[in-house]
Length: 109
Image 1 (cartoon, rainbow, N blue to C red):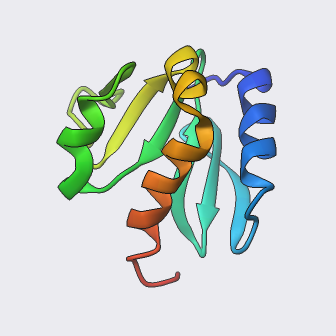
Image 2: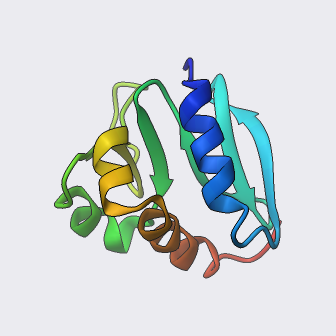
Image 3: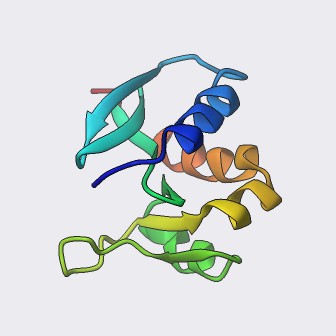
């Protein structure tokens, strides 16, 4: 999965506000950010990835610009694509916080 370097830089800036336990890694052929070893978010081309968990997945999908992540041909429940404009309009911090709430419920790896 190719990624957009401009979106990656925007994500880096947003994550710099609370960097505790956050690391950047290559995943899915693009860039993802991990929190205490668990995937938190990532970037694609023209869109972001957020790991919101299965319980909040449908609520997240109801938000503007959100879509099912299914680059394998099967929906990846708990992960959503969010179009860049929609995510930035809502505020990346809002989406990051939603993902962080789920990821912080997981044991560190």
